[in-house]
Image (cartoon, helix red, strand yellow):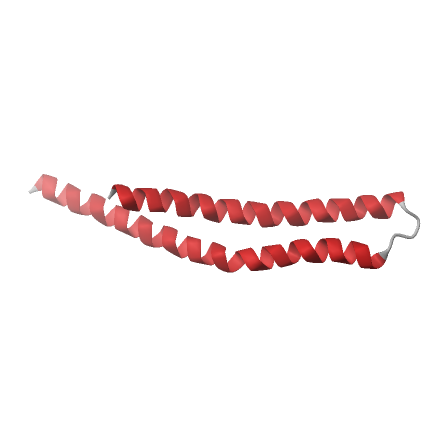
Amino acid sequence: MKRWKRIKFLSGISVVGMIAASTFGTVVSMVRTFNTISMEEKPAQNELADSISTQLWIGTILMPFVLIAAIVWFVAWLRVRDFRILSEHKNRS
């Protein structure tokens, strides 16, 4: 049971961390892009597009890992729940 609790905790942290990292990276790159646009008269469009597109690719790469970690978290949640239900059932008997 302790193993499943640990797996549940780590996979939950992984899901939240990967979503936060991909979102934070995209927001930061867009803020930099808008700062560049506001500071320069004619910013290089290729550089602006590359900055945002790199962060979007990172988010795209992380999403399958988020899905896998979410599935692992769900399975661990079910296992922990099943252990609790069985232990409560044994205590009543």
